[in-house]
Length: 136
Image (cartoon, rainbow, N blue to C red):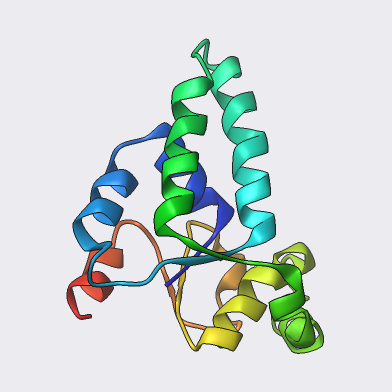
């Protein structure tokens, strides 16, 4: 399952996503393009500080997650950039790396972002993702 940056942020700052990943890490493979981890690290600190929290615990969670999550370098998914951009262009072209990674792996996307709707790639939100995760 390809994880969007917003799910990685939920991992760093919340508990529901953490619980799901811990529960299913031995039966489901979790992936993300490198840019998602970069964004998650950048915004986790900013969000924590804005909430008056210490950013270090969230960043530590992201570091632990990078041991579970397979992170793909751009060089691995960039051949699918054109196809991914065509699928996401009407919504958010900056999300093409997530679509490209999902296309490359034949996996659904775990996201809270409706921009992936209509991209031709299955997407799951946190509210319903356990249906998919249990089915593995």
